[in-house]
Image (cartoon, rainbow, N blue to C red; front, top):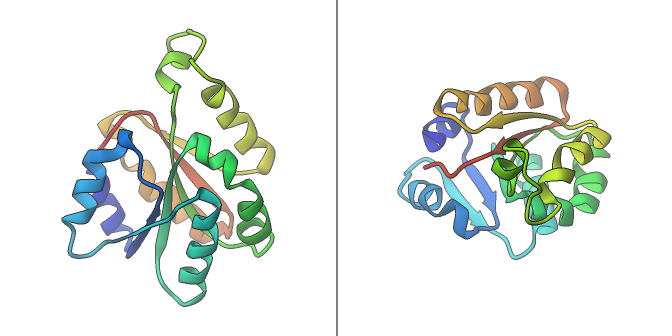
Length: 159
């Protein structure tokens, strides 16, 4: 589902720091003849790799976990925000279900994710059910129209 939506958007490259929560999506991307996966070692590195792809005319997106989103903030600020680049930023929403259920999440990542995005002016959409997968296309269209990053917060594992 996610892979197909990325392909509909014309995404050619997915810049990603793989994690165990996204294994089935990883397998789906690796099986795609249209999408190439670029693995990075650190989330901030993803911002530089994405910028290079964008500046050479490639269509790309980034997929990282919310804890990694925090690591990437200086690269996001210095490259994506300062250069006013469009960016489809897909963020694994670690701790979302605990937060949604009114429980205190194991760590503070879920509590901080949306407020930090709001502070940076990054609009975000939730993708936690099958009928929300279309938010990828919505976010992609919006980022291309505004030259601002737009995030899709992934509440559960997809393929």
